[in-house]
Length: 251
Image (tube, rainbow, N blue to C red; front, top):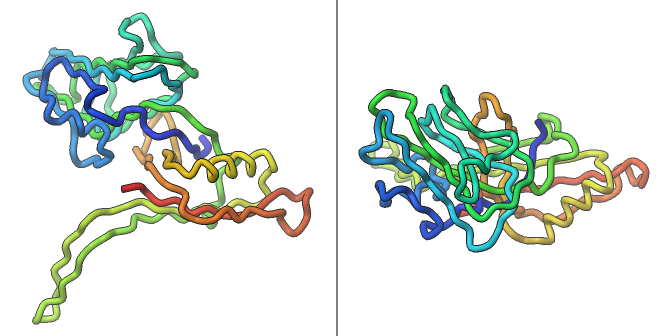
């Protein structure tokens, strides 16, 4: 699957979320983008289902859904309050063993989405979710850049104190994703899509390798921080365009 740019998560405030009155203190972890903090049920172990419903102030378009750092074995997703309203393809897992799950569904306009969680992967275990994304694709890359032209990096922000004995104490503040992406000889159409994204000057979601099987869980809310420098490749209009972008994870 090609890399893709998607819109920001439509799940972005606790007032959107209703969770069958269980452990509301961790509801914010469904969208805080820190995968080490996870939503967790309380008293909803083996064979006890619960619903997580996201209600939107106005209808939103959905074609991408993913769960990161979760322990769910059996769950399903439906929309607009009725279990008969299922996406195509249907999201209904009964024997999931992955900790990250990515779904590409047909474009659907919804006013709410419900994640029904039934079983955790281990018996007598509370259900946990690190991130719940609901959104839509902006566009796929025309083609993935070569390995030499895709340079991702985790940028560590830290405070280093050098001690009298020559050693150091390191205090890690945060790790943030950043990447440089280059393209050569891309079409005018794809260049226009990139320009439209650049001109929005807003954050978006970058999914390097979205796949429905064995997804690595990598997805980042980023901002485009470089200039727009695409130009005719080799000074030849028929050769397409070449250029690069730098994206950095948002705060």
